[in-house]
Structure formats: structure tokens, C-alpha cells
Image (cartoon, rainbow, N blue to C red; front, side, top):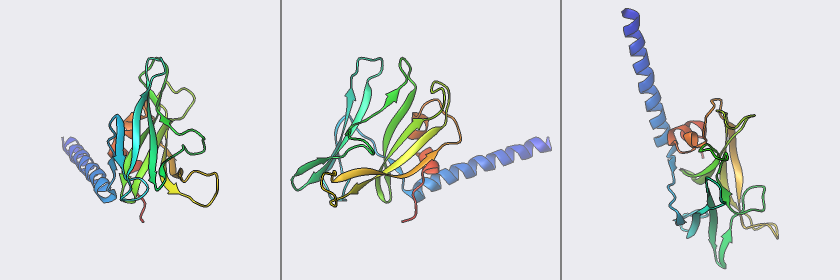
Length: 190
């Protein structure tokens, strides 16, 4: 009886402190998911006062699961600059599911950190993506460059990358949970 009572106290303390730690992580980090609606989303991406926007749309590819897509446009004096994907000549982010399955194996999330907006991608890694696998999370920061001719004015640069130690069935289980993102990809000190 004594051991059971003590075990309950220890468990209650662990739950309390882990909940407190997660809440403290979120409030201290100022981390929050940025909700995007289908269509045009007005954002300040490049500068606090810029009139940039992101377009969230559906790419219908005649499969059981149409892909969610996201593209970014930065306001410039001459109009708008389209932001390419890192290490690619493509401009649109797509989620990806296993064929004929609801399991999402790649997706993206816009997150507000104290340092500004960041784009986080999540991708299952492993031999059999239909099984629970670790997830590779990458955090990208938008950077401006006027140095090289022929290079886009704005690009996404990888700021941090981790692979989870825990395995997951679906990337959304991490990507849509601000507490998990706060723990796995906390904000760095400025």
C-alpha cells in the first residue's frame, strides 16, 4: 500500500512537472503555430512591416489524397518575389501521403518564434514508411540576398535539423503539436 501511494505521488509529480515544463517552454520560447487558411494568407515574412503573403492551395493529382501546397511571395518595390524551396528550383511545398493511406510522410508548418517566422518540415525516415518511424524535422529561416546575380532575392535556409528518437505513424503527430515542436526545436537565444 505504501509503495502504491508513493508511486502515485511520483507519477503525479512527474505529470505536473512535465506539463509545467512544456507550458514554460512554450511561453518562454514564444512559440506558436501559424494557422493558414486555404487561399491567400497575409503575413509579414521578410520584415515586420512587409506586405508578404502565402498561398495555401490543393493540388489535385487524381489520387485518393490531393496534396496540400504552399508558396510564399515577398513584397518588393518592383512587385513580388517568389521564394524557392531549399536546394531546388521548385517554388511550391507539397505534403505527401503514402498511396491509398491516410499516413502523411511529409508535411510543413509555419511557426512563430521570438526571432520571427520559421518554416518547419517533417519527414518520416526509415526502411518501411508504412510502419512507425523516426521523423526528421528541419527548421528554415527566410534570408535575403542581393549579392549574386541570378540568385533569388529570398531563399529558405536550413537553421536546424534533428531526427526524433521516438517513432511515429504520421508526421502530423509532431508537426501540429506546439508542445512537441517546442521540446524538439526550441528557440535559440538571440
